[in-house]
Image (cartoon, rainbow, N blue to C red; front, side, top):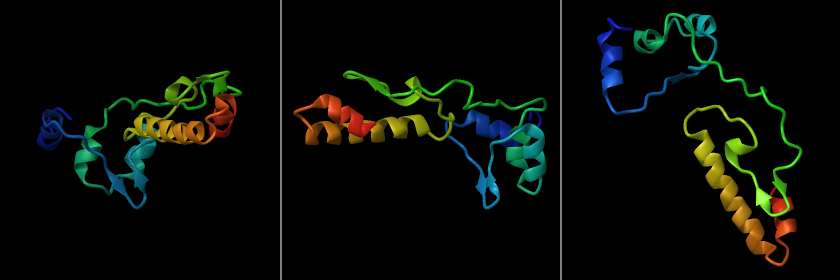
Length: 119
């Protein structure tokens, strides 16, 4: 990558970049990525490190049996892992908060039931 002007230019710009194609997106083990996307333009291929890519194991922790206890609610990565990908955590947190707000508004007389409905 150190000799690829296109890749270096991308690193200097204040932009996010994501490559997608009909065959998939750009997330996998390095050898699989290199093989699968060998027909793509060279810029995303040149951005790959020579040695490895970060693996994010989503199953490295046990899931909690519930997302709440009494009136305390866990949200986002506090209760499960999400791939660090395209602001997924933020979107799910906003959606979850919105649905929780609706449940609390509809079941205002019993917040415990509202939280169970939300969960």
